[in-house]
Length: 304
Image 1 (cartoon, rainbow, N blue to C red):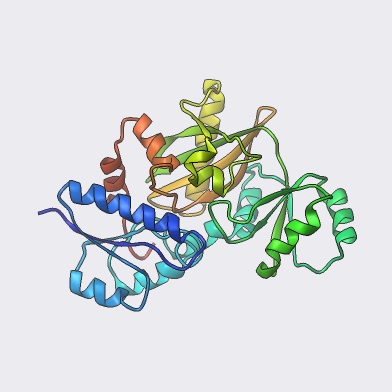
Image 2 (cartoon, rainbow, N blue to C red):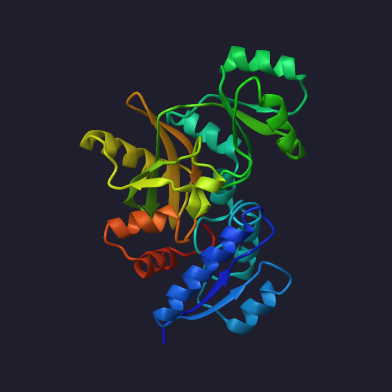
């Protein structure tokens, strides 16, 4: 009999639907391969479910706030059962775009210019600050959301209206917009898994482009890069994974422009849906879905 695996999915973040789909597809694959699986929500029944089911490993299929920001990880640490993906501190650093940006810059990893905005300026004052510090267009986004939730490309003409959407966040990141190619790369454990290029029909690879099959985003693999450039990309990806102390699988998002890679962010819990990129990259390298899941399970741990 193979291991018992408890999958936590759902949650209360804006990425709940994606988390449920990740949990569903991982559970289906594990069951098909002889594992005993239970899916539960991260609610008041979590401790009871864990105690009654007695899993060998907890598969964290949560996305977004409370699921990949160190919060659920701290609870799982207290339970004392090995869980997948990154630990408390690594998850918190990866999820917080301001903290991760500072780590990138300190370690000479190229990333777009940015500043943090606290909604404390008039629209004209902010436009002038942007012109001085970055220049238009800019990307505005929450500091601690994933899946490109509430991310917008702004000119000075639409900035005011887009900021209204984000006002509930108290503070946001305003970032230099980098044109060029969208390339994402993945690490599993300490292994360089591979990369994929995305050509969205939309303005950029936003939430709709990621999860709506009708968005018709083109996935290109292998990525058309000179060998040395591809090696540079994967070296930066692994360096970032290690710098943040991540484990399991991570995906890093880049823009490639004028021969340079700009690291946008690292995702410590990338999705495992039919449209998710890590399973697609993995399959191209010869690692099928169950093998990918088992590699993630193998790297499960506590106290890290």
